[in-house]
Image 1 (cartoon, one colour):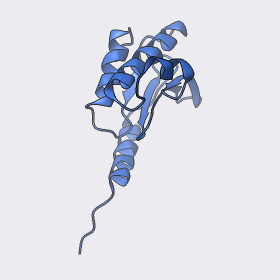
Image 2 (cartoon, one colour; image 1 turned 120 degrees about the horizontal axis):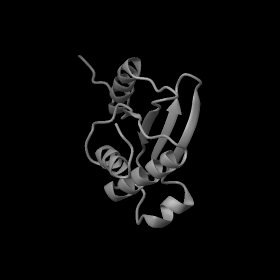
Image 3 (tube, rainbow, N blue to C red; image 1 turned 45 degrees about the vertical axis):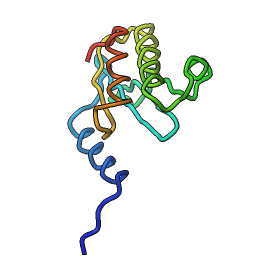
Image 4 (tube, helix red, strand yellow; image 1 turned 180 degrees about the vertical axis):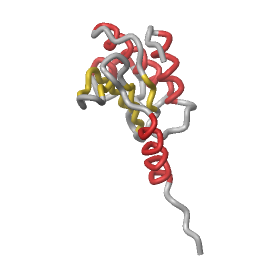
Amino acid sequence: MVSKKSRTEVRVDKHRRIRSRLSGTAQCPRLAVFRSNNHMYAQIIDDTVGNTLVSASTLQKEVKAECEKTNNVDAAAHLGTVIAKKALDKGIKTVVFDRGGFIYQGKVKALADAAREAGLEF
C-alpha cells in the first residue's frame, strides 16, 4: 500500500526546490517567510555571506500589540508592512520573495502584498 507524505514533508521538499533556484545577494536579498500554527516570521537574508539583514515576527512586542491575533491574515499583512519599513530604513528596496514552500494564498499572499504596498519591490 502506498503511503502519503505528510504536509510538512511536502512543504519542505517544495522549499528545497525553490531554494535551489533562488538566492539573495547584497544588492537583492531574499525575503524568507515562515508560517507556523501560531505565528509568522519574515527575514531578509543575504545568502552570499549568510547574514540576516532584517527580521520581524508576530512574537515581537510592537507587532503583537497592534494585532488582535497572531495567526490570521490581518497579522500577516501588518507583519508585511513592518518588515518593509525596516528594510527601507536599512536601504533595501528590492528583494527576491521566498515563500518557503507554502502556497501563495491567504497569509503568505497578504504579507507579500502588504510589503509591496509599503515600498518593497519584488
